[in-house]
Amino acid sequence: MKFFKYKILIIIFLSLWLLLFIQIKVNNSFQEELLYYCQNYFFISPLLLILGQILFSVFFLPCSVITILAGILWGWKVGILYSTIATLSGSYFTFLLGKKYLNSIPIPTNLNNYKIKVNKIILEYGWKSSFIVHINPLIPGSSIGYFFGASKINLLSFLLGVLVGTLPLQLLMVLFGSQII
Figure 1 (tube, rainbow, N blue to C red):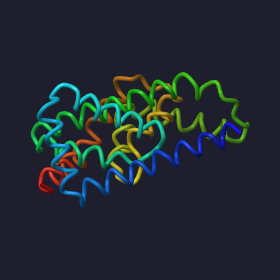
Figure 2: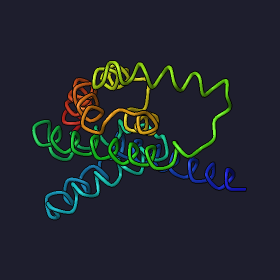
Figure 3: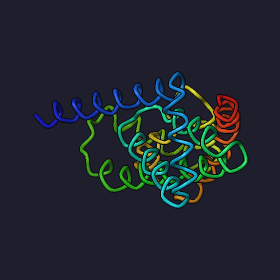
Figure 4: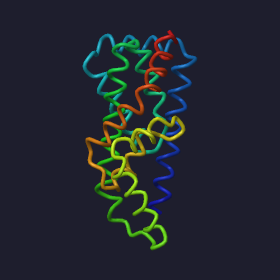
């Protein structure tokens, strides 16, 4: 029953993600409303962007819409700053959840050996292991924090890999967003 509720939440958030992406892409009045909101609520809008990134990360949803949104709302200079903060926040949050909850889950013996090998590789390469995973645009970068949280890597090494690995794609997505309007 718990798994069913989790699936429902994922469907809801995925639907919201698609709706937001479509609205940003094609609805001019929605774009104008977003710009108006950000101009008049300068302190709240970045916090909402960061909260959106955290929620998308927790539910394994692609966060590219948040990055594009940052470019639309603040242009590429300020947008990349907010997008980077949002990405680091989402990664930090999923890392902490992974650290707290994934280590207490019993793992079958055949998978435990695999976990030990992966953990050894992560520890050997440190921040570079996080960088390699995060530079791949097909993996939801912020959500991968769960798995790194279950390893023995320290938080600073993980976040350094997140920063260096996600920055190139973030730059492209924020630039794309800044060119939409």
